[in-house]
Image (tube, rainbow, N blue to C red; front, top):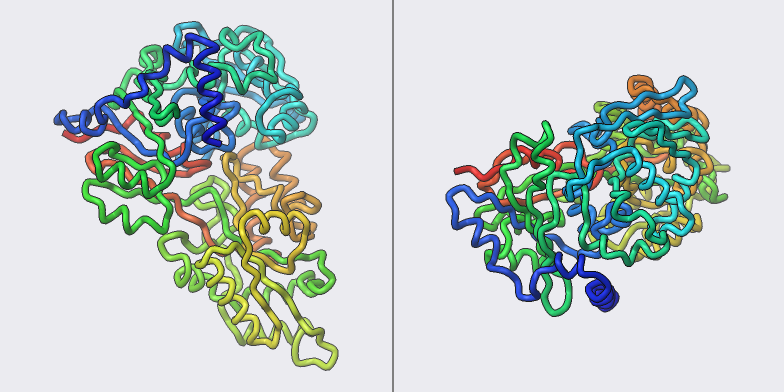
Amino acid sequence: MIKGLHRSFITLALAGGLLIGAVAAVHPPTPPAAEASASAAPTVLVEALVGQIIKLNPLLATYNPVDRDITSLIFEGLTTTNTYGEIVPALAESWTVSPDGLQYFVQLRRDVLWQDGVPFNARDVAFTFQLLSDPQFPGAADVVDFWRTVEVDVLGGFLVRFRLTQPLGSFPDYLRTGIVPYHVLNGVPVDTLSQHPFNLAPIGTGPYQIDALTASDGQIDGVQLRAAPVYRQRPDGRDGYALDRIIFRTYPTFAAAMDAYRQGEVNSIGSVPPDQQAAVQALPGLSVYTAVAPTVGVLIYNWEHDSMGFVRNPRARIALAHALDRVGLVQDFLSGRAIPADSPLVPGSWAYVPGLEWPEYNLERARDLLVTANLIESEDAPSVVMALLTLDDPALVGMANSVAAAWRQFDFTVTVEAVDAATLRERLEAGNFDAAIIELGFAPNADPDPYVFWHQGQDQNYGGMDDRRISEALESARRDPVGLNRQAHYRIFQELFAERVPALALYYPLYVYTVDARLAGVEIGFLSSPADRFRTIRDWHFAD
């Protein structure tokens, strides 16, 4: 991958002066962290990111966290999220939905300029989504498949209509996609978009714009952003934004990022592995922020395996749940990395319902239910034999072994299979498992819709979980464009899930962010991806 990036870098540099003008000399500038600390009230944040800068284009940044972090400050979507994950206007001023839920009319802001001074308008919006719907678009295939089902029409200079083939209450979430400029990319063959100089010299409408790329040994190793003057002209940009510059430096590993902090190269680390939280807290001058990652760890059953047919009996599933101390499992094996889960939805979301009544840890109750389900203490009780699949992470393997030991108390034969990530995915997709501990990620979506995980027949419903009442609740929430109605449908979904336990919600992984302790105004609310940590950057400032 490094060699491929090097070739792309050279090709782009030779192809256009645009990129050459944007790339700083290969010798890094004076360490920015030192520069920031030279002032009583610094205005420069220098952050370490683990990974590589590849394409600073929001349409192509889907699977690269480094690109997503940086582009979130350069570009804006029609919508964004607030601290509760609710979808709110950004480049859109407002929107209305037709009674049948098939048409969204989006009124755009009239006070927005691109960072090169050109006015933003409806043509940019239509152009962006037409790129995404083009069969030759070089980005994520599922994105193309979705946007090919949506018609986009310009109805005026600042009015756009989206026509859907079926109602989709989560549609405003899809409008968070960063808008790209028509006047810069119009005429570029779609299949060559991934090689265009724009990907390393982007022009957006966001609060920060690219100032320079930095490189060493022929490889891009950072980017310098500065506050965008045109954004400061907007009403929402006139106050705050005390950080004049944000500098990102990339490192191949978290250990290298830690070393960079110790050496004064950076004063923030963008993402800390939860198991390294203690090590980071031992570093002087840092504040550590934690939030729930947009992921839920669950224990699923394979409803389609003949040997696992007993899980179709609700009493059997409830008994298996009663046999486990779910909170204790998380505390014993994932302390500091995760918190216990109490819903298949993520806390902090507007749809999340706290305090659901799950089957409590009660071995006597578990045994009674297994008897009534005819799984134990009966001459015709089947021999329950299952393998519990998990990632070969020591903590998760320990958790899986504890689950297996709990179920063995009822004379079940339970073994644990630990595999690497690629094998885990292959076996899940093939349905080659009895039960599994897996993580279901919502990122980069902010909408809480878990349809693909739990609805009958969906590809990511790996165990073929088949509960019609749960599916009906998800269908209703998916169709309804009214937030209050969707909230009610998701409440029903969560209550049914806790009552019928088609799978077990176990834990929520934590996202850990560490930043210069002098930096005030940092608040991390609901996360659809780590890039959401910048949601309140308008208020960030270094204390005097």
